[in-house]
Amino acid sequence: MERTLSIIKPDGVKKNVIGQIISRFEKSGLRVAAMKKVWLSKKEAEGFYIVHKERPFYSSLTEFMSEGPVVVMVLEGENAISKNREIMGATNPANAAEGTIRKDFAESVERNTVHGSDSPESAAFEISYFFAATEIL
Ligand code: CMP
Image (tube, rainbow, N blue to C red; front, side, top):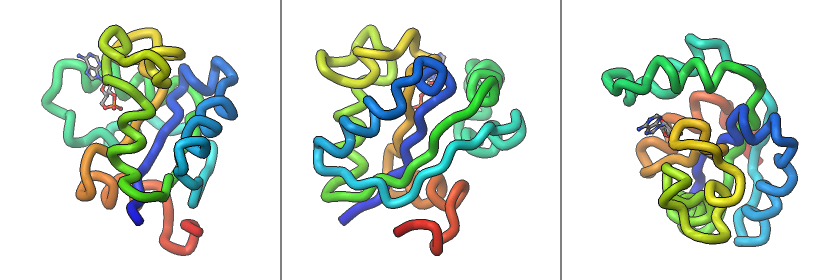
């Protein structure tokens, strides 16, 4: 059993496809262990994406992530990290496989609808950024 952090980004929330996205996770055998809708401040988005702070897209990414509400979730299941990444598709929707969330909903490499932890270490940091242990069930 593994846990990963998933975020439905502001573009996905605006498109009103929260349910469609969660349904894809559930159909693949992942379970929602925690969930909330939050509107991140720029500072909170910067803290979440701190590993990218030297990247040229950091400022624009954190602007985007704080432009409207997001849905944050802990997904749980066997190989949850890699399974979630498979369901999301490649970071750049232009390279995303057919049937993936990013292929179907994302607009660009930045406005790419969903985020998922990329390793057990980042999952631990990202889950604790949003949820207390008592909120993960
Ligand atoms: P995510 O999986 O949340 O991880 C970091 C995010 O930075 C990524 O999805 C995109 O939203 C964004 N990103 C990654 N590469 C680029 C890029 N080349 N230009 C703009 N944004 C990017």
